[in-house]
Amino acid sequence: MRVRRQTDLLSGLMFIVVGLGFSLIARGYSMGTAAKMGPGYFPFWLGIVLALLGAVVAIGATSAKAEEDRMARWDFKTMLWVLGSVVVFGLVLKPLGMVLSVLVLVILSSMASHEFSWKGAVLNAIVLVIISTVAFVYGINLQMPVWPAFLTN
Image 1 (cartoon, rainbow, N blue to C red):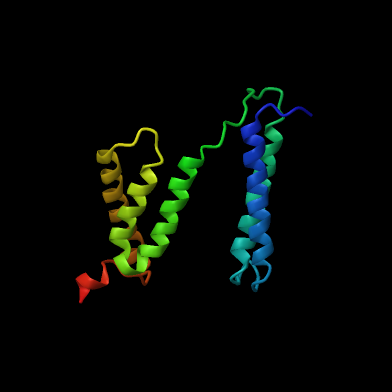
Image 2: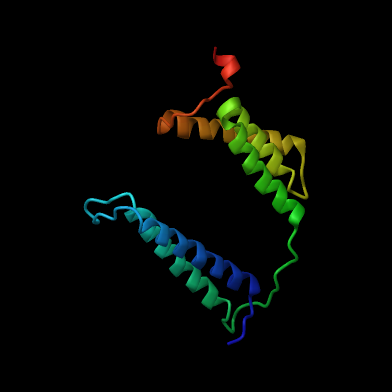
């Protein structure tokens, strides 16, 4: 068995590990049945499906028809921009509210792109603020501050 697509093999293995991890953690919750699902039912089966999908992708990496490729070198600067923006989002969500936090998240994570432009980042941020506000605040009534506390008092 020869691995022809290294990217597919590694992404498949990642899906398997994440899926099995979610399923193992979900076993700690009440499962219920298909008719009356408990809090662990959906994440457990979603993890199993993700692991199976990962197995299909990983096995496909050995196909004789697959085009050969190699994993590119890790770009740690890009990874730090993206992960750092998510951490900053989590830290500023409560004091700044969702609107400003999403703006910060999108602009910081856009800095990871090699084709970064302020116009594109700001446009993406505005669109994502509108979508997330409509979906999370008005759609499912998620209880989170929309605006900074100093603006709402």
